[in-house]
Length: 200
Length: 144
Image 1 (cartoon, rainbow over the protein chains, first blue to last red):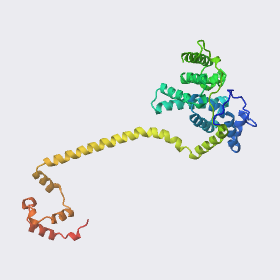
Image 2 (tube, chains in turn orange, brown):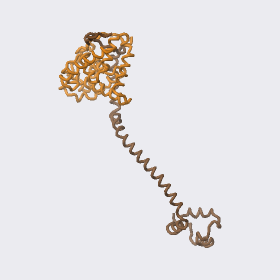
Image 3 (tube, rainbow over the protein chains, first blue to last red):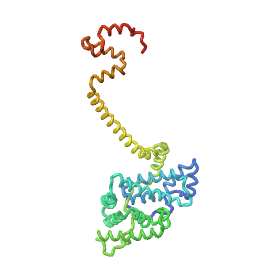
Image 4 (cartoon, chains in turn green, brown):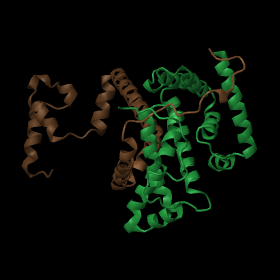
C-alpha cells in the first residue's frame, strides 16, 4: 500500500527506530572526527528526518516538494554542522534551517510564477482538495484548508504548537520571536481557523 | 455541516498526510548521496548562481553598447557616401594628385584599361610619356 493510514501521534523525544540512539553531544563529537563523520551524520538524519519532513510537508503540502526540501535541509546541516555553536539545541537549529527552507521555497514559488500570495494559497488548497490521503475525511480536509488560509508565519506557529506540540520557548528559539508574541499569534490563529470553519 | 459554536478541540488531532512505504528507510541514503555529490561538485556550482545574477546587467549593458556602436557606425557610413557623392570631380582630382600615392596594384588596374580610356587631361601626361616613365624605373628592383 502506498499510503498506510496512521493515527496522529507526535514524534517521541527519542525515536525508537534507532537501535542505540546517540545524544546530540555524542553525535557532534563523532561528526567532528573524520573516521566517524559519515556514520554520525547518518544517525543524525535518522534521528531527525521525520520531524523535519513533517514540519516541511505541512507547509508545502506536496510530498515531492517536501522530500526535496528535507534532503536540502540535511545537506545544509552537513555543510554547516562544523560551525554549529552548542549554546543552542541541535534540534532547534535544524528546525530553524527547515523553517527557512520552507519560507524560501514558498517565496521563490511566488517569484518564479509572478504569483500573488493568494494564488500560492489556492494552489496549495487544490493539492489538499485532490489529495488521496484526505479523500473521504471532509472534516480534516476543511481543517487543512482553513490552516492554509493563515498567513505563512502564523501557519508555521500554528503547526509547531498544534501538531508538533513544541514549547513556546523552543519556538521562540527557532523563530527568533518573543514567547508573548508567539502565544498571541497562536491564539489568533486558532480563532481564525474556528471562524473559517464556521463560514464553510 | 460545522456547529455554530465550533471549537478546534472538537476535531480529533491527527496528521492527515502520509508518505510512500519505506520512505524514511531510504531517505538517509538519499541524503548521503546528495551530500557526496555536492562535495564532489565543489564550490563552483555554488558560485554560478550569484555569478549569473551579477553577469546579467553587465551583459545587458554590453548588448546596449554594441547596439549603439553598430547603429552609429552604420549611420556614419551612409553620411560618408552621401558626402562623397556631393564632392565635385575636380576637388577629388586635386586631393588625389596632392595626397594619394599610387601602389603597384593601381598599375595592375590601369593595365586593364584601354589607352583611349585614359584621358590626357586627367593624367596630364600622354600614354607614350607614361610608358617611358615606367621604363625609366626598374620595377623589379623595388622593395615591397
